Image (tube, rainbow, N blue to C red):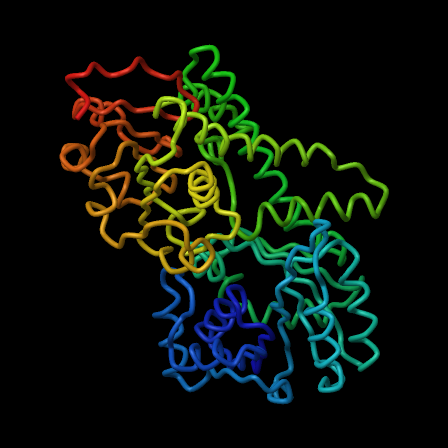
Length: 441
């Protein structure tokens, strides 16, 4: 099929390349000329495993192209909307970019065309867009994405479910989407056909639930720290219950990124507009933010009540491993706040150095882990990259001034680190006794 993808940011770029790999011909359109030029030359302007290869393969077929001109979508019969919906100060979604793109697209539509929403939007938006699209003789479907950064290619081509939101009885829209995703559906991926509102709610409801689960285990971590319970064993025991499951029950620094925080705030805001109280999600976010403060409090305590002038090394800046995204990153937030308290913060990350540097110039950045560790009076592991979880504690001990590490993700082999003379403080665990002077360098 001839397909257009309107919006070539994270979602759109992945979707465009993936659709070509399924055999379709795709034109990606974006207003950002630098982004379009980069993608057209096979260069991905962000880090996502597997995407550079998929993009290069797609361009080589001649069936993938990119443009800044909306008129170039005319030959396509199916148009995916992958426009960003950033958060406003009130927490609501900014739909301006999306509505502008729709207004530009509608005059180019032909009767029978299908417009497919991929963007995450407040419930009710699809119905508004459908009226505009249908005025041109076209139809609308809402097909929410469930991408996880670091696994976006896999999640696009091997999703755990496919959801189509359509007008009641619009079998033609369903058939068109089935053609687009034929290979995926033949592999056994479940498919659900719903109304617009349900399709819109699936994404934000899923993210709200995951955020709640993460904050729940972190609230339990606070209880474990105070009582001496073992948070890892507690999570394992809870996870054995099939009604609960073990996934997303890892205690630590909490969630961040461009989806979960934005989606739960937007969900609360939309709930208020509908007269529905979703205030419990505010407490979910409050618990999440408390974990960041807990790390800062531990750092201050470990350094004698003040971090002024202290050299602190932070391992990890991205909000999660396998990503260079630092939007609402708990790790980078902790780094900024320590700098504000007067600490000298040295930091490293396998992929997020440049994105972090652009948003937070006040840190000392290192591309090399040993350089970042050298002379540290305190080490914080805040993103669970394999480069950090697999770090040799003996090597690290030879570089630092003090062998104290705060494990903000419960990702280190604490026994191995303790054997190397480290004092390990892990979130969700009681604070251990201070090291003897002989163990401190």
